[in-house]
Every structure is written in C-alpha cells, then in structure tokens.
Image 1 (cartoon, rainbow, N blue to C red):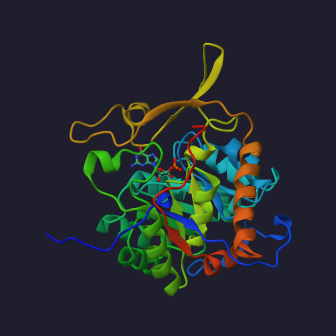
Image 2 (cartoon, rainbow, N blue to C red):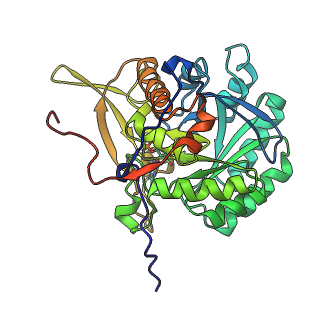
Image 3 (cartoon, rainbow, N blue to C red):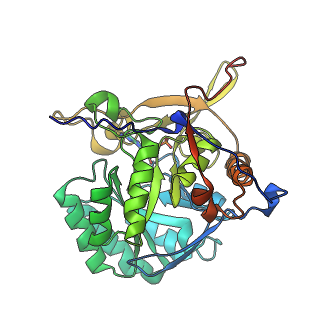
Length: 348
Ligand code: 5GP
C-alpha cells in the first residue's frame, strides 16, 4: 500500500490571485481559442466550453442554442443512428459549426457499428467524436481509441475519463486529440461515495494538462464546475476545454420533463450511471453493479442563453482580474492561492 503525501486540490481549495493589468474592460477580453489538433490536424476555433453528453444536456436543441455563441455540445449517445445522421447532414443549414457538436459513443462493438453506419451517411459533416467511458484505465478502452483512430484518421477524437498524466499521454499516443479529465467530481456523480475512487479535480486538470501539452495534445476538464469561477480556475489550471453538466441542466434546451409542484417548476436531472438512466436505457441496474449517479429535481431555469451570459461574463471578468487579454493567456497569468474559506455565507 502506498500513500501519496502531496496535497491534491479541488476548485474550492483555491482562489486566483489578482494581478496588475492594462485591461480596461472585460469587453477587451477574447475568450475564444484556436487549436490545431495533434492527431486529426483539424483547426478548432470557438469558445471551448462543451455541454456534457448526458441525456439531459447533450441535446440537439442545446447544440442549436450554444453554437450560436461559439460553444459546443457533446450529443448524448441515445439518439438513433438515423437521428444523428440527419443532424450532422443538416447541421450546416442550421448554422451549427463542425465543432458545435461531438458525436458520443461507448466502446462496445455495437457502438462501433453505429458509428460506421452514421459515418457512411454523413461523410465529412461529422468531424468531432467523444469516446466516453466512466473508467478510462482499461486496456480495452485504449485499444478502442486506437481502432477508431485507425478507421477515421480525419476525426478529432476526445476520449476519457482519466485523472492522471501517465494515462493522458497513453491516450494521446493512441490517437486521442483531447483527453477528458475527471473521475468523481460531477454534480450527480456518486462514484467517490460508492467506490472511494477519485482525484481532486483541479489537481487532475493541472497534472493531465501538463502531460497532454508536452505531447501537443489538449484536455477537457469534465465535471465539478458549480459556478463560473470554477471554469476560470479550470482554464487557469491548464484546461483547454471545460465540460458542463449540472450548470447547463434545467433549461428549455435540456431534455427531461418539466414538473410543477406548489406553483414552482422543476426539471429532472440524473447521472448517466444512476438507477434512473440504467432503467431507461439498460433495462435496470445489472445484478453485479451499483448505481453511481444521483437523480435530482432542479429549479427550472428558462432559456440557456441567460445562464451562458453569466458563465461567459464570469470567465471574461477573471481574465481582466489577472490581465489576460485572451483566454489563452489565463493559465500563464494564474497564481492560485490556497484558501480555507471561499464565500461569505451570511445570505446563504
Ligand atoms: P457536472 O458538470 O454536472 O459537475 O459534471 C458532469 C459530468 O459528470 C459528466 O460530463 C460526466 O463525466 C459525469 N457524470 C454524469 N453522470 C454520471 C454518473 O451517473 N456517474 C458518474 N460517476 N459521473 C457522471
């Protein structure tokens, strides 16, 4: 048994120290990024925030809403091959950029066959892929990434989830362009509770970004952002992309029934490994496993555009506080200070 003694940090353990700046307004800050991916060689331009491929946030309606602002969505994997093919074939007419929508998949043979069927119909209108498993540490997963890379050299592949530098490097060498980072930090995730496994998200981001950047790859910080300041910390820690579930749930564009109780409106939101999701898609929780996700009712929040304005405004403002003219400069300008307190809770 081995104990790693160095302290690992979560978003709540730090704040970003302000720095002298020549910026006068947050309007002067450019929060878009450009990347040329290591393995696909495609060029990305956009605001590197991605709605999670959960079935409530990874919707086509969300893709339509976010792409107008330069953001992306990882579509959930429960759409049919026909629905996905139609979506990608017509995305251009809907004004959705190539980077506006990732096709998401698991690593079964059926997932591979579905991808082949969709690719055969969509040609080059589908450019971004998200290969997603709860535990990215299995040999089967790495081999699957290699297989997809070999079959589709032109696709930009995001793959995860992992939390350490060694496996980040391995995934990039296997063909991933973007490594998705995060095990256990999600708002409706119970992995840490059920298994005791995980890694504090900010440290995971810092360590995986370092490993990925050394090879010319990118990372996406997935999970654990609960306020706009957490996105600023993720980007400050080296994340190239940030993925959001809970912060984008509960909107008009999110799937799920609208529920009214005592005159208040709510939307249902649940983890993709929750009992609810498994009952919906897998006919129940298999005997050998336990659910690792929550099912919650959250306040209905109207159109996602208003929430977006808050999120993007927060990130822009963080850049002005440290004198970063561009989001790209945020990491270089970030000094984290470790804290024991973050917020004044007088008013809850
Ligand atoms: P959030 O932004 O809500 O904090 O985190 C979103 C992320 O949580 C997702 O992108 C996904 O990686 C993770 N996630 C979603 N559903 C589940 C689940 O049921 N169990 C676990 N362990 N993680 C989940």
